[in-house]
Length: 186
Image (tube, helix red, strand yellow):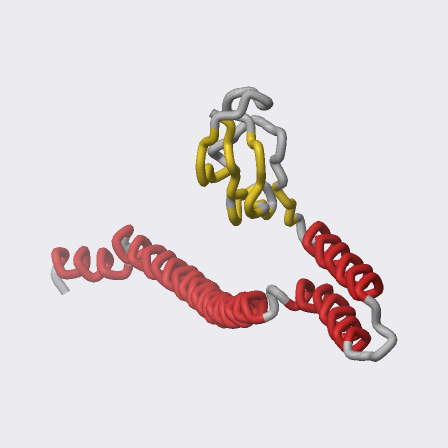
């Protein structure tokens, strides 16, 4: 073997920096690959958990929407239930009064008394539901709550005063339902 060939053979047996770097690089690449795989699996688990959460939230929202729709339908259907329950005793009183009026011993006074009691009972029911009666006789004319049917000269009343009420008005929760129809002093 020539000297040159011996030197080359000796050089081949010596580990080079390139081969050491290559092994370290491969180890590092393997470690990075393992880390990336672990991170990918973790991210996939998180994605699955978020998908599950989104599906559950969507199902909850659908259930809430359905329950809300049913509640609103029931509220519309039965909004007057309390009012009807309060009005039924008034109807019972009217029916009893009508039956009593048919009897031979019924007097005009007893019928009038029964009507007055039923009328008061009706006003009480309306008051329980925040319905206020407007009876403005002797008050200043208020176009927000009164409807003038006519104006009449009257030396006994101040100008623009309600002299007489033809039909009472009603307010529900401070909102006008029907204005009082009145005669106003000129």
